[in-house]
Image 1 (cartoon, rainbow, N blue to C red):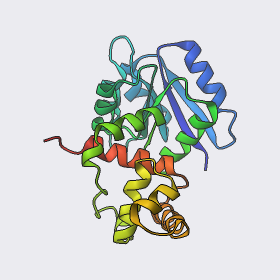
Image 2: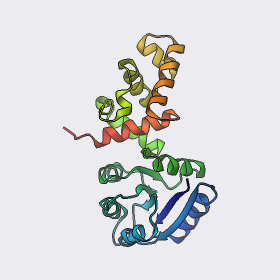
Image 3: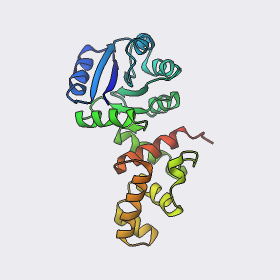
Image 4: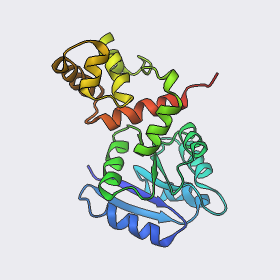
Length: 219
């Protein structure tokens, strides 16, 4: 499957750089671009992208407001926000608007392509530095997402414990020590968690838990 991407950024050089990176991959196609958030909805109607890469700061209608309009459409594309600023307020607003990802503009090319693929499959992706900050901020209230997500319902009680420890950045050895189990058993639990949730690495687990924590109503 070819992933169709729309670029929304007011800087022509940024768009050109993103296009070059994305079109270096055989499974990604840049189907259109615009330099104005207010034109994003029309561009989505015109190009029918799977994923929209949206700059946060743009003159006129900013990216957060534009993302909100795009995500209100029937059968909307996935939206990934791009910015040079990793401010918590931007992250929360983007996630609450329904964005599937939040990346910094200095993201390495291979990570950008990976993020596009992950988001196209329906998962969330957040820059590692931002993920870490979100996890630190909500450290005392991290929980396993609702079992309404069928994948979560497949996890055993022990695997749910392991899931949260993985999200907190613990190694297999540290997980084993925390749960008083062997490292081999810890490794097995981690493998099962990744497989049942459909993730390929720990970073995806951390981003998923961080997003869920950020979206939980605050007391």
